[in-house]
Image 1 (cartoon, one colour):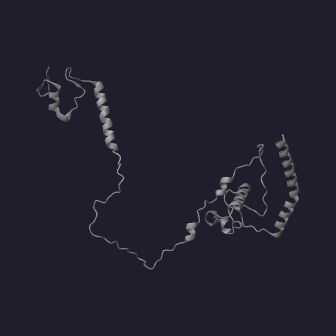
Image 2: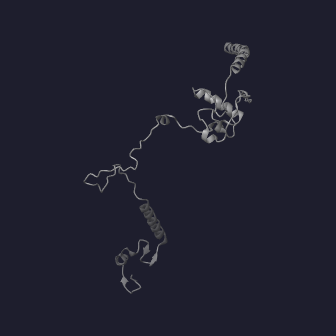
Image 3: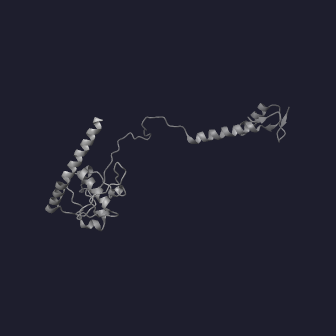
Amino acid sequence: MERKSPTGKKFRSKPQLARYLGNSMDLSSFDFRTGKMIMSKLNKSRQRLRYEHSSQNKGKPDLNTSLPVRQTASIFKQPVTKVTNHPNNKVKTDPQKAVDQPRQLFWEKKLSGLNVYDIAEELMKTMDLPKGLQGVGPGYSDKTLLSAIASALHTSSAPITGQLSAAVEKNPGVWLNSTQPLCKAFMVTDEDIRKQEDLVYNRRPTAAMKWRHYSHDCSNVLLR
């Protein structure tokens, strides 16, 4: 069986045709007997070529863990000269800034909208703040102010004075003291302390009576 090229050259076998064409054409899916391309083999060959092409584009992973070496290393030492326009300037360092941790402004707003429920899943009434405590800052409320003051009492050992600067109302983002709660400056007087002492004195018998009832109920439960 012979095959003829368009130029009239005769080929008696597929290897002879492959030697003549070289790498210009892939004859792996060519049927020399019928003179046609086998489609199933042709599709597989195309898929294999696409996979090889994509693998070459991805590149091989660099598994070398050694440090990179500069190929154009100079034999002679090359000193570096520091040039400055102001040699008398000194770098000022503030060690206190490095110690203090940054604080997020208005973080108390995250506590807004949170409610407390008791064991019976009933909403507990919040405390009423004194009239002297007034909130300051964008979007403040009494609940937010109460949470901010409670957090300051538990997390800070410094005295709580509120925002002493009057400019905080004009621009809270600039003049806000992040170590103090979001309330105006207030002063605790002797009258406030006396009222608090009277309140504790009046509430103490009620608390003691409730504690005795609670202890009695716990004892009865244990005896059962």
